[in-house]
Length: 58
Image (cartoon, rainbow, N blue to C red; front, side, top):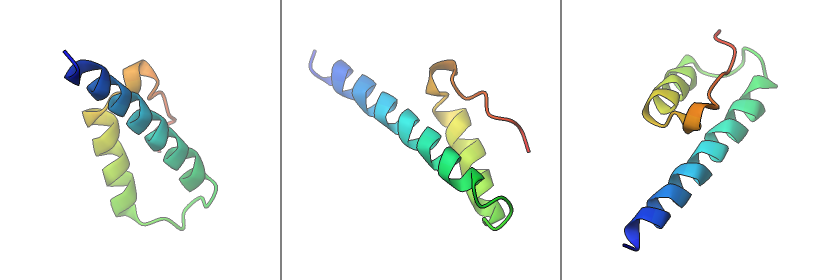
């Protein structure tokens, strides 16, 4: 019974972490490596951020 709130909190914190990383890496526009965008697409697919992953597709 204790595991479910922990998993939910980890998912929410990881979602905000990915959102913050997305905002940070949008500022240097094309200087990022393409492997990071692959990781970001994988992370958005694996952790859908509860419907908040409506980022503009590059």
